[in-house]
Length: 317
Ligand code: FES
Ligand SMILES: [Fe+2]
Image (cartoon, rainbow, N blue to C red):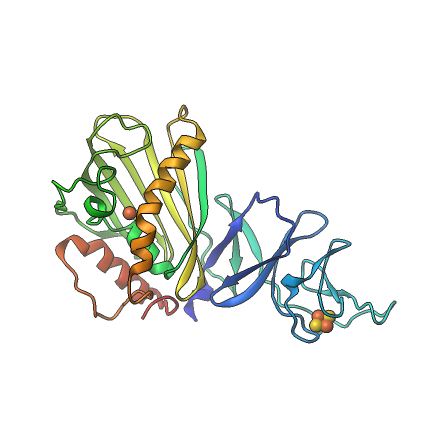
């Protein structure tokens, strides 16, 4: 599985959560929790003793205690106590698989097996950051990212907001690539009735799109009339091949508008996307034909070629 080359987002970094919380990553059950020092840990959700779900256990003395016979594990996955044998030092073989975690962009990212690419770099984004989500979505991560990169749905899905039914046309745009092969649109112009939480009316809005990694992308938009510059990222956690957990981050030069107003706008936009996204069949993104492509879909086509080039096999068909 080529997906092991990347780190994948699994949770908000500043979540006060102690856990244990059951999650899925690439269809594998994992358990997230924090030890006595607040250190987050992600372990395979399967006890090495008799295979019980560790996420059904509880925290005991800063360790994760299995619900079945009470074996306790530390944040490195090492077994530190076997209650049936007091004083016994468990051998190293009684260990649970641990997935390394690191923090980036306000999220915890997991390494599922020797990642070679770091979490994406973000440059040119404003300092004020808001993170929205998680949104658990019943479609594959690549379908969700492709939707984030798609402009020709604005008039239909976001009528009166990001698009206008009187102007469904997609002006020509050019897709280029970064040195490492990620698709980019340097400039895309869209007429938007209500482009942001603070827009006073319709305006031409200039977009820049960049695919950041197989399941992440960045867009930056600014109204031609001026106003704040907003960058948005989509961070998709591939929970299963046909479901994902999404976060959207907004980086804005708008220092005035309250968090709640910006959040309400973003939640409204995604609540328009989600039902359509979840209605798509197949839920996995087709990489080898089977779906019609038009001139407006050049970025989608480039994204699919990029996934193929990366060797992605999960969430695609
Ligand atoms: S199954 Fe976990 S302690 Fe026995
Ligand atoms: Fe949308």
